[in-house]
Image (cartoon, rainbow, N blue to C red; front, side, top):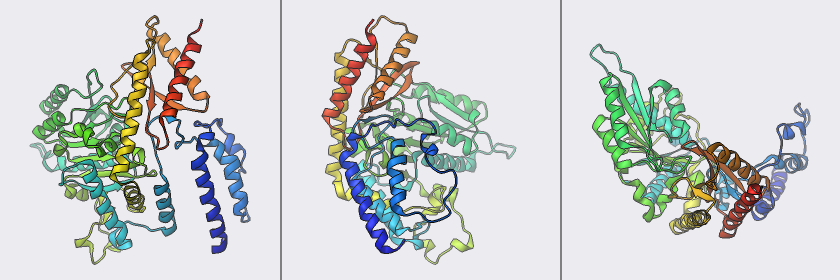
Length: 471
Protein backbone atom coordinates (compact mmCIF):
# COMPACT_ATOMS: atom_id res chain seq x y z
CA UNK A 1 0.00 0.00 0.00
CA UNK A 2 1.51 3.31 -1.04
CA UNK A 3 1.19 6.50 1.00
CA UNK A 4 -1.50 7.92 -1.26
CA UNK A 5 -3.70 4.85 -0.81
CA UNK A 6 -3.01 4.84 2.91
CA UNK A 7 -4.02 8.51 3.16
CA UNK A 8 -7.23 7.90 1.22
CA UNK A 9 -8.35 4.97 3.36
CA UNK A 10 -7.11 6.61 6.54
CA UNK A 11 -9.49 9.52 5.99
CA UNK A 12 -12.25 7.05 5.12
CA UNK A 13 -11.69 5.09 8.34
CA UNK A 14 -11.64 8.23 10.49
CA UNK A 15 -14.93 9.30 8.92
CA UNK A 16 -16.38 5.85 9.62
CA UNK A 17 -15.25 5.97 13.28
CA UNK A 18 -16.73 9.46 13.69
CA UNK A 19 -20.03 8.26 12.22
CA UNK A 20 -19.92 5.19 14.46
CA UNK A 21 -19.46 7.30 17.58
CA UNK A 22 -22.28 9.58 16.46
CA UNK A 23 -24.70 6.81 15.49
CA UNK A 24 -23.79 4.05 17.95
CA UNK A 25 -27.20 4.19 19.62
CA UNK A 26 -28.69 2.75 16.43
CA UNK A 27 -26.86 -0.56 16.94
CA UNK A 28 -28.10 -3.34 19.25
CA UNK A 29 -25.90 -3.26 22.35
CA UNK A 30 -25.48 -7.04 22.54
CA UNK A 31 -24.50 -8.77 19.31
CA UNK A 32 -27.23 -10.98 17.93
CA UNK A 33 -24.70 -13.31 16.29
CA UNK A 34 -24.88 -17.03 16.97
CA UNK A 35 -21.82 -19.28 17.44
CA UNK A 36 -20.07 -19.76 14.10
CA UNK A 37 -21.87 -16.91 12.30
CA UNK A 38 -18.78 -14.80 11.66
CA UNK A 39 -16.37 -17.56 10.78
CA UNK A 40 -18.95 -19.25 8.59
CA UNK A 41 -19.12 -16.20 6.31
CA UNK A 42 -15.37 -15.98 5.75
CA UNK A 43 -13.02 -18.19 3.69
CA UNK A 44 -11.32 -21.01 5.55
CA UNK A 45 -8.01 -20.53 3.73
CA UNK A 46 -5.85 -17.39 3.46
CA UNK A 47 -5.80 -15.46 0.17
CA UNK A 48 -2.95 -16.12 -2.24
CA UNK A 49 -3.15 -12.70 -3.88
CA UNK A 50 -3.37 -9.30 -2.23
CA UNK A 51 -6.88 -7.97 -1.80
CA UNK A 52 -7.88 -4.31 -2.07
CA UNK A 53 -8.65 -2.42 1.13
CA UNK A 54 -12.12 -1.57 -0.19
CA UNK A 55 -13.04 -5.26 -0.22
CA UNK A 56 -11.52 -5.92 3.22
CA UNK A 57 -13.33 -2.93 4.70
CA UNK A 58 -16.61 -4.07 3.11
CA UNK A 59 -16.22 -7.44 4.86
CA UNK A 60 -15.47 -5.65 8.12
CA UNK A 61 -18.77 -3.78 7.88
CA UNK A 62 -20.85 -6.67 6.53
CA UNK A 63 -19.37 -9.67 8.37
CA UNK A 64 -17.36 -8.53 11.38
CA UNK A 65 -19.48 -5.64 12.67
CA UNK A 66 -22.65 -7.74 13.20
CA UNK A 67 -20.61 -9.91 15.58
CA UNK A 68 -19.47 -6.98 17.74
CA UNK A 69 -21.03 -6.19 21.10
CA UNK A 70 -20.98 -2.42 21.41
CA UNK A 71 -19.24 -1.48 24.65
CA UNK A 72 -19.45 2.24 23.85
CA UNK A 73 -23.26 2.18 23.50
CA UNK A 74 -25.13 4.44 25.97
CA UNK A 75 -27.26 1.41 26.85
CA UNK A 76 -24.18 -0.44 28.09
CA UNK A 77 -24.92 -1.38 31.71
CA UNK A 78 -23.05 -4.70 31.82
CA UNK A 79 -19.94 -5.86 33.70
CA UNK A 80 -18.04 -2.58 34.11
CA UNK A 81 -17.46 0.12 31.50
CA UNK A 82 -14.50 -0.17 29.14
CA UNK A 83 -14.70 3.37 27.86
CA UNK A 84 -12.88 5.03 25.05
CA UNK A 85 -13.11 8.68 24.06
CA UNK A 86 -12.27 10.75 20.98
CA UNK A 87 -9.04 11.97 22.59
CA UNK A 88 -7.94 8.45 23.43
CA UNK A 89 -8.81 7.14 19.97
CA UNK A 90 -6.71 9.85 18.34
CA UNK A 91 -3.78 9.03 20.61
CA UNK A 92 -4.10 5.33 19.74
CA UNK A 93 -3.87 6.28 16.08
CA UNK A 94 -0.60 8.09 16.77
CA UNK A 95 0.69 5.16 18.81
CA UNK A 96 -0.09 2.77 15.97
CA UNK A 97 1.49 5.12 13.45
CA UNK A 98 4.70 5.47 15.46
CA UNK A 99 4.97 1.73 15.98
CA UNK A 100 7.44 2.32 18.81
CA UNK A 101 8.72 -0.51 21.01
CA UNK A 102 9.13 1.05 24.44
CA UNK A 103 10.91 -1.66 26.42
CA UNK A 104 13.79 0.50 27.68
CA UNK A 105 14.42 4.24 27.96
CA UNK A 106 16.75 4.34 24.96
CA UNK A 107 14.29 2.64 22.60
CA UNK A 108 11.92 5.60 23.08
CA UNK A 109 13.06 8.16 25.67
CA UNK A 110 9.88 10.23 25.39
CA UNK A 111 7.69 7.18 26.02
CA UNK A 112 9.49 6.35 29.27
CA UNK A 113 9.51 9.91 30.55
CA UNK A 114 5.91 10.58 29.55
CA UNK A 115 4.85 7.43 31.42
CA UNK A 116 6.77 8.62 34.49
CA UNK A 117 5.15 12.06 34.33
CA UNK A 118 1.62 10.92 33.50
CA UNK A 119 1.54 8.33 36.28
CA UNK A 120 2.62 10.98 38.75
CA UNK A 121 -0.16 13.25 37.45
CA UNK A 122 -2.53 10.37 38.04
CA UNK A 123 -1.20 9.80 41.55
CA UNK A 124 -1.89 13.45 42.36
CA UNK A 125 -5.36 13.33 40.82
CA UNK A 126 -6.30 10.33 42.98
CA UNK A 127 -4.81 11.75 46.17
CA UNK A 128 -2.34 8.87 46.63
CA UNK A 129 0.63 9.54 48.96
CA UNK A 130 3.77 11.12 47.41
CA UNK A 131 5.81 7.97 48.09
CA UNK A 132 3.96 5.94 45.47
CA UNK A 133 5.56 5.53 42.03
CA UNK A 134 3.56 4.33 39.03
CA UNK A 135 3.92 2.31 35.88
CA UNK A 136 1.44 1.08 33.28
CA UNK A 137 0.52 -2.60 33.07
CA UNK A 138 -1.83 -4.06 30.49
CA UNK A 139 -4.55 -5.15 32.95
CA UNK A 140 -5.25 -5.28 36.68
CA UNK A 141 -4.82 -9.06 36.53
CA UNK A 142 -1.22 -8.56 35.45
CA UNK A 143 -0.70 -5.89 38.11
CA UNK A 144 -2.02 -8.25 40.79
CA UNK A 145 0.35 -10.95 39.55
CA UNK A 146 3.21 -8.45 39.81
CA UNK A 147 2.18 -7.70 43.40
CA UNK A 148 2.04 -11.39 44.28
CA UNK A 149 5.47 -12.04 42.77
CA UNK A 150 6.87 -9.04 44.68
CA UNK A 151 5.29 -10.33 47.88
CA UNK A 152 6.81 -13.74 47.26
CA UNK A 153 10.24 -12.27 46.72
CA UNK A 154 10.08 -10.12 49.84
CA UNK A 155 8.74 -12.98 51.97
CA UNK A 156 11.52 -15.27 50.77
CA UNK A 157 14.05 -12.86 52.26
CA UNK A 158 12.94 -13.69 55.80
CA UNK A 159 10.66 -16.70 55.47
CA UNK A 160 13.31 -19.37 56.11
CA UNK A 161 12.86 -21.82 58.97
CA UNK A 162 15.52 -23.21 61.29
CA UNK A 163 16.37 -26.02 58.88
CA UNK A 164 17.07 -23.50 56.13
CA UNK A 165 14.02 -24.30 54.05
CA UNK A 166 11.42 -21.76 53.05
CA UNK A 167 8.04 -22.11 54.68
CA UNK A 168 4.92 -22.32 52.46
CA UNK A 169 3.70 -18.82 51.67
CA UNK A 170 0.05 -17.83 52.08
CA UNK A 171 -2.15 -15.25 50.31
CA UNK A 172 -5.34 -13.72 51.77
CA UNK A 173 -8.31 -12.02 50.11
CA UNK A 174 -12.03 -11.72 50.71
CA UNK A 175 -14.52 -14.17 49.25
CA UNK A 176 -15.59 -11.36 46.93
CA UNK A 177 -12.09 -10.70 45.56
CA UNK A 178 -11.51 -10.86 41.81
CA UNK A 179 -10.64 -14.23 40.27
CA UNK A 180 -7.23 -12.82 39.26
CA UNK A 181 -6.07 -13.22 42.87
CA UNK A 182 -6.50 -16.97 42.76
CA UNK A 183 -5.10 -17.21 39.23
CA UNK A 184 -2.14 -15.01 40.13
CA UNK A 185 -1.39 -17.08 43.23
CA UNK A 186 -1.32 -20.21 41.08
CA UNK A 187 0.93 -18.63 38.46
CA UNK A 188 3.27 -17.12 41.08
CA UNK A 189 3.76 -20.51 42.72
CA UNK A 190 1.81 -20.03 45.96
CA UNK A 191 -0.61 -22.78 44.97
CA UNK A 192 -4.39 -22.79 45.24
CA UNK A 193 -4.36 -24.49 48.62
CA UNK A 194 -2.35 -21.59 50.08
CA UNK A 195 -4.98 -18.98 49.22
CA UNK A 196 -7.33 -18.07 52.06
CA UNK A 197 -10.69 -16.53 51.18
CA UNK A 198 -11.86 -14.50 54.17
CA UNK A 199 -15.51 -14.17 55.12
CA UNK A 200 -17.39 -10.95 54.41
CA UNK A 201 -19.93 -8.86 56.32
CA UNK A 202 -23.49 -7.89 55.42
CA UNK A 203 -22.11 -5.38 52.90
CA UNK A 204 -19.85 -7.99 51.26
CA UNK A 205 -16.68 -6.40 52.67
CA UNK A 206 -13.84 -8.39 54.25
CA UNK A 207 -14.15 -8.92 58.02
CA UNK A 208 -10.88 -7.71 59.64
CA UNK A 209 -11.20 -9.99 62.69
CA UNK A 210 -11.56 -13.01 60.41
CA UNK A 211 -8.41 -11.98 58.54
CA UNK A 212 -6.48 -11.60 61.79
CA UNK A 213 -7.60 -15.02 62.94
CA UNK A 214 -6.64 -16.68 59.64
CA UNK A 215 -3.17 -15.13 59.69
CA UNK A 216 -2.58 -16.15 63.30
CA UNK A 217 -3.77 -19.68 62.55
CA UNK A 218 -1.36 -20.04 59.65
CA UNK A 219 1.55 -18.65 61.65
CA UNK A 220 0.83 -21.17 64.42
CA UNK A 221 0.83 -23.93 61.81
CA UNK A 222 4.31 -22.95 60.64
CA UNK A 223 3.23 -21.24 57.43
CA UNK A 224 4.43 -17.84 56.23
CA UNK A 225 1.69 -15.22 55.60
CA UNK A 226 2.99 -13.25 52.62
CA UNK A 227 0.32 -11.13 50.97
CA UNK A 228 -3.18 -9.79 51.50
CA UNK A 229 -5.30 -8.25 48.74
CA UNK A 230 -7.82 -5.61 49.77
CA UNK A 231 -10.49 -4.83 47.21
CA UNK A 232 -11.99 -1.37 46.83
CA UNK A 233 -15.01 -1.98 44.62
CA UNK A 234 -15.48 -5.73 44.25
CA UNK A 235 -16.55 -7.13 40.90
CA UNK A 236 -19.94 -8.46 41.98
CA UNK A 237 -21.21 -5.58 44.10
CA UNK A 238 -18.48 -2.87 44.38
CA UNK A 239 -18.06 -3.67 48.08
CA UNK A 240 -15.25 -1.81 49.83
CA UNK A 241 -12.90 -3.70 52.13
CA UNK A 242 -11.89 -1.76 55.29
CA UNK A 243 -8.48 -0.73 54.05
CA UNK A 244 -7.06 0.72 57.25
CA UNK A 245 -7.96 -2.33 59.34
CA UNK A 246 -6.57 -4.68 56.69
CA UNK A 247 -3.43 -2.56 56.44
CA UNK A 248 -2.87 -2.67 60.19
CA UNK A 249 -3.06 -6.47 60.16
CA UNK A 250 -0.64 -6.55 57.23
CA UNK A 251 1.80 -4.29 59.09
CA UNK A 252 1.64 -6.37 62.28
CA UNK A 253 2.43 -9.60 60.46
CA UNK A 254 4.75 -8.38 57.70
CA UNK A 255 2.37 -9.03 54.79
CA UNK A 256 2.55 -7.27 51.45
CA UNK A 257 -0.68 -5.26 51.11
CA UNK A 258 -1.95 -5.02 47.55
CA UNK A 259 -5.00 -2.82 46.87
CA UNK A 260 -7.23 -3.75 43.93
CA UNK A 261 -9.29 -0.71 42.91
CA UNK A 262 -9.49 -1.69 39.24
CA UNK A 263 -12.95 -0.19 38.68
CA UNK A 264 -13.57 2.11 41.64
CA UNK A 265 -10.19 3.83 41.63
CA UNK A 266 -11.50 6.35 39.10
CA UNK A 267 -14.02 7.56 41.71
CA UNK A 268 -11.10 8.91 43.77
CA UNK A 269 -10.69 11.66 41.17
CA UNK A 270 -13.43 13.37 43.23
CA UNK A 271 -12.22 14.39 46.72
CA UNK A 272 -15.59 13.54 48.27
CA UNK A 273 -15.09 9.89 47.24
CA UNK A 274 -11.70 9.42 48.86
CA UNK A 275 -13.18 8.02 52.06
CA UNK A 276 -12.57 4.56 50.64
CA UNK A 277 -8.82 5.28 50.41
CA UNK A 278 -8.49 5.74 54.17
CA UNK A 279 -5.40 3.73 55.09
CA UNK A 280 -3.90 3.63 51.58
CA UNK A 281 -0.59 4.86 52.99
CA UNK A 282 -0.23 1.37 54.52
CA UNK A 283 -0.38 -0.30 51.10
CA UNK A 284 2.64 -1.68 49.25
CA UNK A 285 0.93 -1.60 45.86
CA UNK A 286 -2.24 -0.17 44.33
CA UNK A 287 -3.89 -0.74 40.95
CA UNK A 288 -6.75 0.86 39.06
CA UNK A 289 -7.76 0.80 35.41
CA UNK A 290 -8.11 4.05 33.45
CA UNK A 291 -9.39 1.75 30.69
CA UNK A 292 -12.57 1.13 32.67
CA UNK A 293 -14.18 4.35 33.86
CA UNK A 294 -11.59 6.96 32.86
CA UNK A 295 -12.20 7.24 29.11
CA UNK A 296 -8.91 5.59 28.07
CA UNK A 297 -8.92 2.84 25.46
CA UNK A 298 -8.18 -0.68 26.61
CA UNK A 299 -5.57 -1.61 27.67
CA UNK A 300 -4.17 0.74 30.33
CA UNK A 301 -3.81 -0.31 33.96
CA UNK A 302 -2.09 2.05 36.42
CA UNK A 303 0.04 0.19 38.97
CA UNK A 304 1.59 2.09 41.88
CA UNK A 305 4.19 0.77 44.31
CA UNK A 306 5.69 2.19 47.48
CA UNK A 307 9.00 0.34 47.04
CA UNK A 308 10.00 0.13 43.37
CA UNK A 309 13.16 -1.67 44.42
CA UNK A 310 11.27 -4.84 45.35
CA UNK A 311 9.31 -4.74 42.09
CA UNK A 312 12.46 -4.28 40.05
CA UNK A 313 14.36 -7.04 41.89
CA UNK A 314 11.48 -9.35 41.10
CA UNK A 315 11.56 -8.72 37.36
CA UNK A 316 14.84 -7.17 36.27
CA UNK A 317 17.02 -8.83 33.64
CA UNK A 318 20.49 -7.90 32.38
CA UNK A 319 21.28 -9.65 29.09
CA UNK A 320 24.10 -7.97 27.22
CA UNK A 321 21.95 -7.10 24.22
CA UNK A 322 19.62 -4.96 26.37
CA UNK A 323 22.30 -2.95 28.19
CA UNK A 324 22.69 0.76 27.39
CA UNK A 325 25.01 3.46 28.63
CA UNK A 326 22.25 5.36 30.43
CA UNK A 327 20.79 2.44 32.42
CA UNK A 328 21.99 3.69 35.84
CA UNK A 329 20.16 7.01 35.57
CA UNK A 330 16.85 6.19 33.81
CA UNK A 331 13.77 4.01 34.29
CA UNK A 332 13.75 0.94 32.09
CA UNK A 333 10.15 -0.17 32.40
CA UNK A 334 10.95 -3.64 31.08
CA UNK A 335 12.03 -4.28 34.71
CA UNK A 336 8.75 -3.04 36.21
CA UNK A 337 6.58 -5.94 35.11
CA UNK A 338 6.28 -9.16 33.16
CA UNK A 339 6.53 -7.85 29.61
CA UNK A 340 9.77 -7.04 27.88
CA UNK A 341 8.11 -5.43 24.87
CA UNK A 342 5.84 -2.53 25.75
CA UNK A 343 3.38 -0.35 23.83
CA UNK A 344 3.37 3.43 24.19
CA UNK A 345 0.31 3.29 26.46
CA UNK A 346 1.08 6.51 28.30
CA UNK A 347 0.31 8.62 25.22
CA UNK A 348 -3.45 7.96 25.28
CA UNK A 349 -3.64 8.53 29.03
CA UNK A 350 -1.75 11.82 28.64
CA UNK A 351 -4.16 12.85 25.87
CA UNK A 352 -7.20 12.04 28.01
CA UNK A 353 -6.00 13.92 31.08
CA UNK A 354 -5.10 16.98 29.01
CA UNK A 355 -8.21 16.84 26.82
CA UNK A 356 -10.72 16.61 29.68
CA UNK A 357 -8.78 18.16 32.54
CA UNK A 358 -9.37 17.19 36.14
CA UNK A 359 -12.64 19.16 36.14
CA UNK A 360 -14.04 17.30 33.15
CA UNK A 361 -13.13 13.89 34.51
CA UNK A 362 -14.63 14.69 37.91
CA UNK A 363 -17.83 15.95 36.28
CA UNK A 364 -18.22 12.66 34.42
CA UNK A 365 -17.75 10.59 37.60
CA UNK A 366 -20.20 12.73 39.58
CA UNK A 367 -22.84 12.52 36.87
CA UNK A 368 -22.57 8.74 36.65
CA UNK A 369 -22.85 8.45 40.43
CA UNK A 370 -25.91 10.73 40.37
CA UNK A 371 -27.56 8.54 37.74
CA UNK A 372 -26.79 5.38 39.71
CA UNK A 373 -28.37 6.92 42.82
CA UNK A 374 -31.39 7.86 40.72
CA UNK A 375 -31.78 4.27 39.54
CA UNK A 376 -31.31 3.07 43.13
CA UNK A 377 -34.14 5.36 44.23
CA UNK A 378 -36.49 3.93 41.63
CA UNK A 379 -35.71 0.40 42.80
CA UNK A 380 -36.33 1.35 46.43
CA UNK A 381 -39.63 3.05 45.57
CA UNK A 382 -41.04 -0.01 43.81
CA UNK A 383 -42.54 -2.56 46.25
CA UNK A 384 -41.78 -5.56 44.03
CA UNK A 385 -38.06 -4.79 43.70
CA UNK A 386 -35.26 -4.85 46.25
CA UNK A 387 -31.65 -3.69 46.48
CA UNK A 388 -29.17 -6.44 47.23
CA UNK A 389 -26.07 -4.34 48.01
CA UNK A 390 -25.02 -0.79 48.85
CA UNK A 391 -24.42 1.62 45.94
CA UNK A 392 -21.17 3.50 46.66
CA UNK A 393 -20.19 4.12 43.02
CA UNK A 394 -22.00 3.44 39.74
CA UNK A 395 -23.34 -0.11 40.19
CA UNK A 396 -26.82 -1.05 41.40
CA UNK A 397 -27.42 -4.70 42.36
CA UNK A 398 -31.12 -5.51 42.59
CA UNK A 399 -33.79 -8.07 41.82
CA UNK A 400 -37.52 -8.46 41.46
CA UNK A 401 -39.09 -9.92 44.57
CA UNK A 402 -42.83 -9.87 45.25
CA UNK A 403 -42.32 -11.46 48.66
CA UNK A 404 -44.47 -14.48 47.78
CA UNK A 405 -42.07 -16.83 46.04
CA UNK A 406 -39.36 -19.26 47.10
CA UNK A 407 -35.72 -18.44 46.34
CA UNK A 408 -35.45 -20.86 43.42
CA UNK A 409 -38.56 -19.34 41.86
CA UNK A 410 -37.15 -15.84 42.34
CA UNK A 411 -33.89 -16.86 40.68
CA UNK A 412 -35.75 -18.29 37.69
CA UNK A 413 -37.95 -15.20 37.40
CA UNK A 414 -35.00 -12.79 37.51
CA UNK A 415 -33.06 -14.83 34.95
CA UNK A 416 -36.04 -14.55 32.62
CA UNK A 417 -36.28 -10.84 33.39
CA UNK A 418 -32.64 -10.32 32.46
CA UNK A 419 -33.05 -12.23 29.20
CA UNK A 420 -36.14 -10.18 28.33
CA UNK A 421 -34.33 -6.88 28.94
CA UNK A 422 -31.24 -7.82 26.95
CA UNK A 423 -33.16 -9.27 24.01
CA UNK A 424 -34.51 -5.82 23.17
CA UNK A 425 -31.09 -4.71 21.92
CA UNK A 426 -31.45 -1.34 23.67
CA UNK A 427 -29.75 -2.30 26.93
CA UNK A 428 -27.27 -4.83 28.22
CA UNK A 429 -27.22 -5.81 31.90
CA UNK A 430 -25.39 -8.72 33.50
CA UNK A 431 -25.86 -10.70 36.69
CA UNK A 432 -24.06 -12.07 39.73
CA UNK A 433 -24.85 -14.11 42.83
CA UNK A 434 -24.92 -12.38 46.22
CA UNK A 435 -25.37 -14.65 49.24
CA UNK A 436 -26.73 -17.20 46.80
CA UNK A 437 -29.34 -14.83 45.35
CA UNK A 438 -29.47 -14.16 41.61
CA UNK A 439 -28.86 -10.41 41.25
CA UNK A 440 -29.16 -8.10 38.27
CA UNK A 441 -26.25 -5.67 37.86
CA UNK A 442 -27.03 -2.23 36.44
CA UNK A 443 -23.79 -0.31 35.79
CA UNK A 444 -23.87 3.40 34.99
CA UNK A 445 -20.49 4.45 33.63
CA UNK A 446 -20.50 4.64 29.83
CA UNK A 447 -19.22 7.96 28.49
CA UNK A 448 -22.35 8.77 26.46
CA UNK A 449 -24.97 7.52 28.93
CA UNK A 450 -27.45 10.23 29.91
CA UNK A 451 -30.38 10.37 32.30
CA UNK A 452 -32.80 9.53 29.49
CA UNK A 453 -30.96 6.25 28.87
CA UNK A 454 -31.01 5.28 32.55
CA UNK A 455 -34.68 6.18 32.85
CA UNK A 456 -35.51 4.15 29.74
CA UNK A 457 -33.60 1.18 31.18
CA UNK A 458 -35.61 1.33 34.41
CA UNK A 459 -38.88 1.60 32.53
CA UNK A 460 -37.89 -1.44 30.45
CA UNK A 461 -37.03 -3.41 33.61
CA UNK A 462 -40.28 -2.50 35.35
CA UNK A 463 -42.36 -3.17 32.24
CA UNK A 464 -40.74 -6.56 31.59
CA UNK A 465 -41.27 -7.55 35.24
CA UNK A 466 -44.98 -6.69 35.02
CA UNK A 467 -45.36 -8.73 31.84
CA UNK A 468 -43.55 -11.76 33.25
CA UNK A 469 -45.47 -11.54 36.51
CA UNK A 470 -48.87 -11.75 34.92
CA UNK A 471 -50.66 -15.09 35.50
